[in-house]
Length: 454
Image (cartoon, rainbow, N blue to C red; front, top):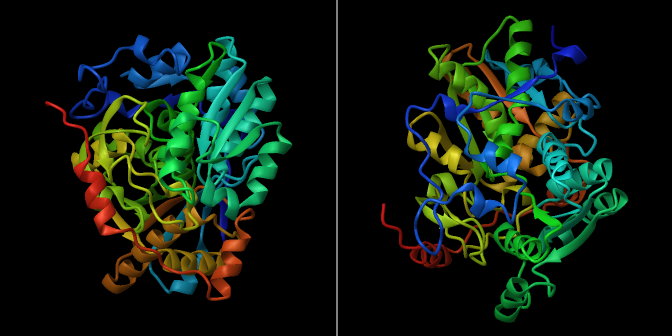
């Protein structure tokens, strides 16, 4: 049998609670620090940016946090998301490994991002907020928050990293279709944006810069809050619906993963899949090997320093301990815009420090080659970000082939590439190039890390 096999759950199996791995960690996360005093921050320090319900989730150590019924009602539009066994890909690779993928591209905006966008919009609406500012890289997060804003009647302002703004015009069109406003970042609308443009009028932008602009705008109005699409604990928490569903679907398949693979930029889709599995392991259950795959042009886990740093370029955010390339680091303009972030989620960084996950990095062209191979075998064109997970899974399958092992591999296909066809056009035309970061720029950014007494 070479046809792909689909495992679906009934609607009533949508998770009723998100899973919080903080409850099972062998060592707690390092505290978030105030940039001025160096002291741990409290909930009130975050109140200008987030509604209190999300702040409490950010610091919670409860194992389960109930999903509000209005959020589950909206989830029903696409959840539970399917899980597939990629038999045709297995055959193409001639591997004894079994390859499964959780497919999050079935959401209204084509990625995993609505899992948290809907939740964040709900909590903001419940707190009486009328406007949310945010940033976006490739546009998946911006379009997802725009979708959620339309549902809850909240105005959405999106600062989109300029290189992606120019590469992916249809993402901007999708945001506008949902009623959001999309601005190329760095922009002249904010002090932080103007400062960047004064130094470099041709700046391609970065997620760190776009975060600064969105945070600056949110802090100016009482009726406005800020939303982040990755990195923070509550964002990773909301994504665990994917892993919770995947555990049940693997049971349907009569299988369990030996290896979990996910692409990592800020860390949300990766953590969403792997944290429920790691939680089982930490509570004495089955052990899994977990591989985080990142772009070689922005390799925070594999080349970054584990240190306290700002989450944004303009230094408006608190200090968090994470694997970082330095808040001033601006990666080259490769197509996986959602992975162009200078830091990794503190929670994912902590898991790496604890030895619970490993990390690897690949160049752009080899990831697109993996994406094309997957599309021709399985019929789904992955987003550029997701090609990194595909590449990681293929490498694991080829390792199994070389070692003669029949391991089970599960990866998160976090989004489709229907808005990224220009990147595939460039790849097939031979115009897509592997881009490397500037070593001297990285050294300078790391040299500028804030001084913190730990």
